[in-house]
Image (tube, rainbow, N blue to C red; front, side, top):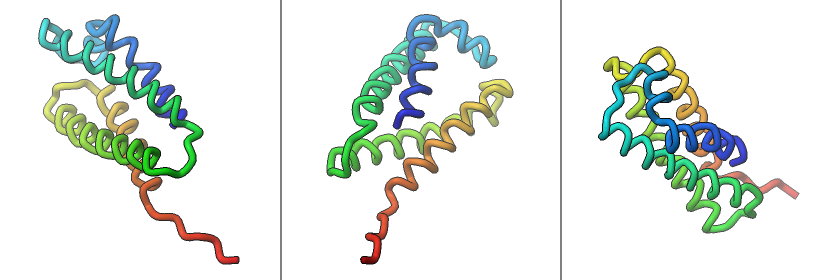
Length: 121
């Protein structure tokens, strides 16, 4: 969860405070609609930053499992959406970097959802 928090720390403030710069870097258009969406997404990433940072040492529990399910579903949907947008030309080559980040987190949080066998005593 610490890695997820660090990624959110990197992108959240950029999207919230300088969305035009980041979207232009990614080769996409920027206008009032994009500004609203990017800033709202930046706010959501800052919320995810706080969630993952504060839950980083959480013991196995229903709450921890719910957080992991949330992050897994979010990253899986974002992965598919980003692949589609990048393939359609909506993002430049840097869009594939975002795809890789979402793929990493989808696999990681999916792995955490796999029940672990109890060690044999």
